[in-house]
Image (cartoon, rainbow, N blue to C red; front, side, top):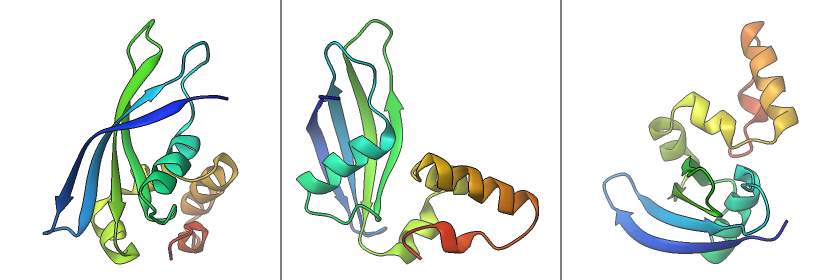
Length: 118
């Protein structure tokens, strides 16, 4: 799938020790790319760790070939775990791992080892 990511705004949040990025994805003639593909491109553009990059939200507009979104890039995994809710961290995992996390959580077994940044 071919798409282009453009960074619209970038802010450094020194209190939380993260970069807050607003981006735009152009995907003419194709569907919206998934979070993992966008996450890889943003991490590569910012020379950041893919594990510490979180796609917070992707805003879709019906009939449009572009989307906007919000991403956070953390400096360490401790801050990421503290500030990002569980469901957002799970959304940024591959589909197979995501289903495994939910199965283990439902059975009240340990699932934290499935997150890549721990």
